[in-house]
Image 1 (cartoon, protein in one colour):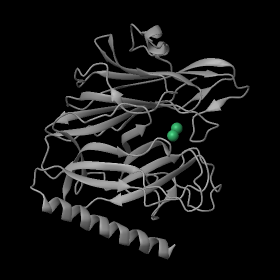
Image 2 (tube, rainbow, N blue to C red):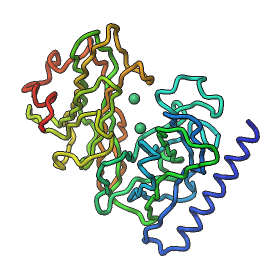
Image 3 (cartoon, rainbow, N blue to C red):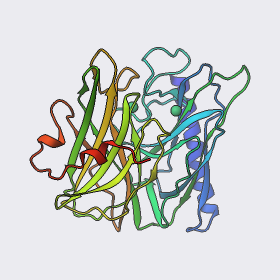
Image 4 (cartoon, helix red, strand yellow):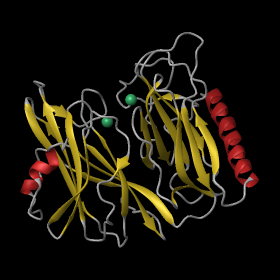
Length: 344
Ligand code: CU
Ligand code: CU
């Protein structure tokens, strides 16, 4: 443990130095490129999720303006980049499989990407055969100094076991600037708790009203379920009119995709998300982190001008059987078909 801690401190200091050094070597508003790669790991078995952290230089603010994946699709099934207050462990590399049963890995410590209870948000997702996403011009995720994001944690999902002696350095080149950007990116996560009855089609639904006086410019969305998800959709509701923000089959690569409309979301608007789940199981399925459980998540990536992103990071509801849109008296004109059917 002490050794591991030393190791990570050393690595962190090194990275801070590199980060500071690289940025000072550049003109203030130039865009730097920071390689955030796996430290030559050896996936010793298949279906392994590994995480590695970097401490962001805490004496400065940086804006991450782009993500350049460096992964071969034969190796990495997906990569997620988390912004954390604290990392899940003090180790250099750990097993951060959401679906990993605890204690099943004797090579790595098992923990979530970010420490429980600390700030945690997904700021980038990569999966094979999916289009690249650039942040809009002038938009960045603020990290470091006075941002809740003090660490970045890279998660790579390795599908296959590696041969002896072969290692991997998949990762992401972070494009960043020290120049103050007036468009800050943020992510709002809509989701539900609840349960799915056996042999059924269930709608897991949530809504929440924007109660902060900000203008939110949505530009990308991502959906996430485990194996029972068929469609996940998200809407903006204003004056009883529902406008689709995005809709995806969650069995397709779970990346960020451009939103259906970039029309702003304002104070007083309601956001809504639905996951349509099909269960052929003879048991109840609960919300939870393992493969046996389900999740219903709709991530909305947006930016705000001249100020911080929303202080609200989550829009979670109790889900079925407690909450349904149809029982919510504040909702009218529910687009029942549009919310559950894929267009193609
Ligand atoms: Cu994956
Ligand atoms: Cu999940």
